[in-house]
Length: 389
Image (spheres, rainbow, N blue to C red):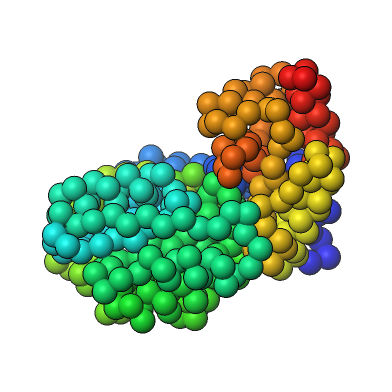
C-alpha cells in the first residue's frame, strides 16, 4: 500500500528490537510489532477490568473472531480452526488423540522438530507403535529427491506420517502436497507441521490435502508469542481432543479447544491486529522481500565463505542455511559456542547448527533486516576463522 513503510532499516522502528543488535533469527520466536503488542495489552486490560464478564462473555467470541480472520489466509472455514498456544501443543493433541497399537508405525524424518520427535517417542512408548525415521537429502537440490526419500519410508504399517512444511534445522521448504499424497496412497494419515509456514508461504489447506495442519502465528504473521492454530479435516475433527480436557468435552471441536481452563489468550485475541499489520505492509510484498533477502543472504555468505547454501531458491522461503568455512567445528556443541560468541562479542543473533559434517548458519530474513547485516555476519565468521587458524 502507498502508506506502507520502506523495508530494511526504516522498518525497524516498527518493532521493539534492541538498538545496535543484528537480529537474524526471526524464525525462532518472531518479533512482535509495537502496534500488535499494544493491542495485546488492551485485551489484557479488558480482562482485568471485569474478569468474570470477560471470561464468560468476551473470551470465546474473541477467539472465534480470530479464527475467522485467520481462515481467509488458509482457505478453510473458521469453524475448522482451533486457536492454541503453539504448534507443539497442537501436535501433542493430535498424536495423543490417536488409537495406536503394537506394530503400527509413525513416520518422521531426521529434520522433524525435536519437540515433535519427543512427542512421537512418548506416544510410541505408550502404545507399542514403532517410530520410523528417514533421512532427507541435505543439502537438497530438487523436490523429487525429497519425495523419493520420504516415500521410501512408507509401508503398509504406517499409520501417520509427520511432514514439516518448512524444516526448522535446515530451512527447506518441502513439497508437502506431494508428500501428503504419497502418505495417503500408502494408507497413512498425514500431519503437516507448518510451524514456520503461515505468512512465509501461501497456504491452501484443501490443496495440501492433509488430515491435520498446525502452524505458528508468532513467527511470520507477527502475532504475540503464544498464538498458533490447529486445523483438522472434517473426517477426523470430532475424534480430536485437546491435551487438557475441560468443560467443553463432548461439545465438539471448537468448544473443547476454545475452553481448556482459565488462561490469558491475549496473544490469540490480538491476532486480527497482527494480520491487519501484515496486510497494511502487503502480504505478497513482505513475502517477496523476505524470500529475496534470504536468497541474497545465501549468495553473499556462500561467496564470502567459499561454501554452499542448503537449498536453491525453489526450496527456500524466508530462511536459508549456509555452510560455515572449514576449521570452525563439526559438532553441535561447537556450533552453540560459536553462536554464543557471535551474540556476546558482536551482538549478532543467528542459530548455528551441526549438519552434514559441518556447521551451518540459519539466517531468518524479516522486513527489518537488510544486506548490511548479512555482510556483518559474513565478516564476523571470517574473523572467527582467522582466529581459529
